[in-house]
Each structure stands twice: as structure tokens, then as C-alpha cells.
Image (cartoon, rainbow, N blue to C red; front, side, top):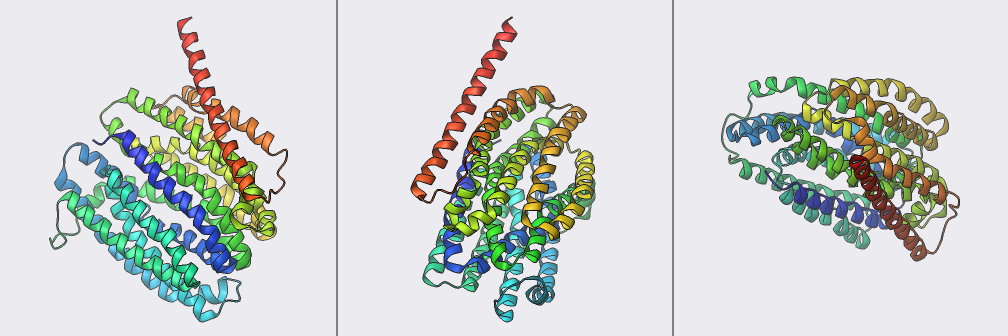
Length: 495
């Protein structure tokens, strides 16, 4: 079993690198290609998430099953499961390409509001579908390797491909400013990534591509209950998370959608930095639960919660508190800052609640009990989706941003304690007061103080310095608050 500290560190290096270079490169792409073209890049990001729904039940299932079987050294079982899912993904890949062929002209003509030539727009959208389909295929192999806890290789490879995906693509666009060329390059990188991941998976599991027996229906049936629960949950969750983005691509002009995309990418940077915790933590929690190590399970769960609350949540507070300035920093546009500041504020705060509340989901995955999450997701969908449609078309981006924040807050306050009580794996109050409260108190005070003055600072060096100092100051205060909390807890025990 690999070292969880090394896995976490390399995951954060890889994910942090992707987030940082993405944040650095995207403003330059925005200025070179224009807001219309950047709107297409935003649509590309949304479509990728939606297409990944096709494998929403398979990928968490295979990662979990690999983690369970690997701990028992059942390599033949791992090979059989992987090859069975591989066949399903290949069929879905072909299906997505057929959809792309028929729907690309419709998107070009009826969905987007843009002055871009119809044929050019149609060609780009078709290419976007193909890239998403190929990257969807890569998700299968990523899931196998994550279940195998092959994080060092995965993260090293991710850094290489993200270098080609972001900085190199920027250099290409800088010398040849053409949005079509940008997507052609993304297509090439996606194909190379798929090949490399496929080779690594087959080498790690010890089977070759020419062996027969690709599909084993027994394997699929054995995992159907968990896969079905994950599928339902993922479809509902992605519908909730992406409906607002999809609606905005139709409501807003492609130019304004470019501004909206900037806000989404900045706020999603928070989720990107929280994502490695889930990828590293879930396989380990699954293994601990399978081996009956409940104390280690609870300690690891609280430890990672503290990590998120100390280092990630303060970043969300800084982005939300200085939202106008953050948008200006990455666009050099006062118009974009004025348009997107409030939108970014609500999405950043909502994502902060989301990543902390996500720990209850990790519990459910580790125990293989997703019935509660299915019910929760369905209830959230029924409650929020009509509001997103009604207020999104009526009031635009700010309305959906507020709805996003309110539902994330409600979920954190009411749903998280309910799940802890039901699962009885980790006690809620110790988790809350040891893992969350010290950081929450510091971050709340900091946000209120920052929001007293949110005027745009046009000196970018000064602005960057203020953002950096604010973040490290809040992190330092959070670290101090946990130390004080631990000392108080120790004194109470002694008395």
C-alpha cells in the first residue's frame, strides 16, 4: 500500500500546478482570442463534465473495486473488471461521436448568440465533442490507476500533459491566434494522453491488448447496485452543478459568457485544489473500512478536514472577498470585473462550503452505502432546478450564483450532521469542532473585514501582493486557532 502522505503531496503538486498555470494562461488566451472564443472554451469545460456523465456510475465503481481487490491481491479479478469496463467505454465513445455529428450544426445555429461564421462555429463544436469523448475514455484508465493508488506516476504524467495543454497551447495561440488551432492542439494532446494511460494501465495490471475475453457480464452484475447508486447520484449532481452554466451559455451573449467562464474557472480553482483530497482519501478510507480499522478511519477523516479548512477555505475567502479585484487581475477589464465580481463572490463561497461538506460523501463511498446521497441529490435537484430555470432566464448570472450559494450553505448546515448521525462512522461534533470550527471562525471574520472595501485596485503588482498577504495571514491565523483549540482540548482532558 502506497504512502498516503506522498500521494497527497504529489497530488497537490500536480493539481496545484494545473490550477496555477490554468489561471495564469487563461487571461492571456482571453486577451488574445477575445471573449467570444473564450466563451467556447467555457462551453468546452461544461460539455466535458456533462459527457463524463456517461461513465458516472462506472468510474467510481471501478476505482473502489480496484482498491478493495488490490488489498486482497486479486490481480486476475482486477484484469477481468478492467477489461469489462473498457468494452463499455469503447461503445460509449462511438455513441458520443455519433451524437457530435448530428448535434454540432444545431448548437451552431440555434444555441449560441455569436457573430462567428456558422461553418467555423460548427466545425469547432464538432471538434469539442470529439475531444471530450476522447478525454472521457481516459477517465476509465485514470480510475483504475487511482484505485491502484498509482498516484506518483499519475501526478507526474499529469504535470507533463498539463504543460502541453496550457503553456504550450498559449505559445501556439500567441504566434497563431486562431481558436480552431487551439482546439486542434487540444485534440492531439488528448489522443496522446489516452494512449499513455492505456499503456500504463495494461502494464500495471499485467495484460496485453490482444488477449480475448474483453467483456465479463458477471463482473458487471456483481457491481450493479453500487454502480447504479453512483450513476443516479452523479447524474443528479452534475445536473445541479452544470445546469446554470448550460443555461447561461444560451441566455448570455457569447461575449458575456466569456466573462462568466472567467468567474467559473476562478471559483472552480477552489474545487480543483480540494479535488486531490477526495482522490487520495476515498481509496484509503475504503481500505480502512474493509479491514475494520474504525479509529484510523475517523482520525484520517478529521485530519484531512483540517487540511482543507486551513489551506483551501482561506483561498476561497480571499477570492470571494476581493472578487472584483480578482476578476480584474485576470482580465485587465474593468467591465469584466464589474460584471463578474458579485457572481464570483457567491460561487467562491458556495464552493468553500461544498468541499468541506464533501467529506460526508467520502464516508458513504468508503462504506458502499450511497442510498442517502441518492435521496439527498434527488431532493436538491427537485428544489433547485426550477429556481435555476426561472430566475436564471429572468435575472441572469447573479441569480444562479445566489441560488448556488444558498443551497450549498443549507446542505452544509442540515445535511452533513444528518449523514454523520446515520452512518455512525465518524462522530459529527468532534469532526465539527476539531476540524471545521476554528477555521470557520477566522475565515468569517476575515471575509467581513475584507468586504468593507472592495474597490478595484488597478496596480496589478500591488493587488497581487495584497491577495497573497491576505491569504497567508488568514492561513497563519487558522493554524494558530487549531493549536489553541488542541491545547484547550488537552487541558479539559487533564482536568
